[in-house]
Image 1: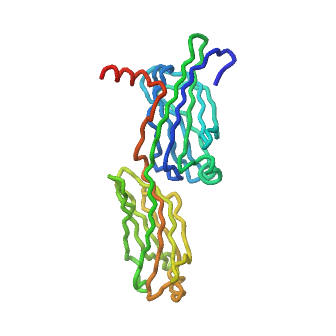
Image 2: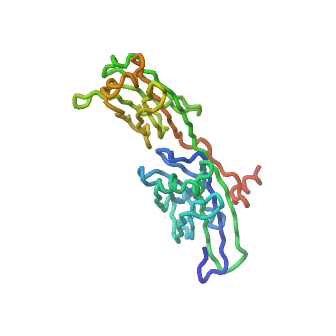
Image 3: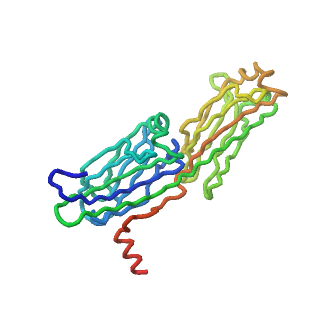
Length: 303
């Protein structure tokens, strides 16, 4: 965070903790609270994360004020481990105009699975941004800001009983609503059905598109249970969203009919569904500054 000619470095550190951050980053991404850096002419900034695909996600820094035409800054972005060690660190020297950002990508599996113990502590992912301005006079300025965002995350498990399964015909739906405890969020709506593809009947499920401007993202496992309650076969629902209708084909109907004694006691089909549903950000805010920015000090003075 220094250069050969620099004698003094003003340093601002922003730490952003994202709670309930499993793979469910949400379809519209996650934005940090806005933070202000005094020694960078009181410019304002955010960090953000969003999905690029099932394999990658991105994280970036963006300037979000209408102040000076261009700001020069040395910055460092990294994730923090449970011990506060810097992980996947990137350093850059850049000029930012209003609205400009720099974006970086990471492997989803690497962060959320292979090295989960390093990156996630109690399902909390922490990003750190250090910003630096160098000069050759005066006293160095240092500041620290901590912010927190909480993602809505619920885990639901339920069992469906489909009676008279042998008579279940294509075109019929049995619907189920998974209501959220979060105010203002529409439920996840899905249905059990039998569909015909190339003349073959399949047991399937449909997840319905949300007509709200707040979409859901979910993972899950849908399992056919045998007569003893054990899972006979399962299908993973990974990284699904309610941006569109989603159709899931589980198995051929004849597979179940040919194993009635094992799977269809009294012609009853039992299905166990386990879901992890992400609702996006439900809370976010600055927890504290070591030294409050000038704009906040002015506000306190006026009050």
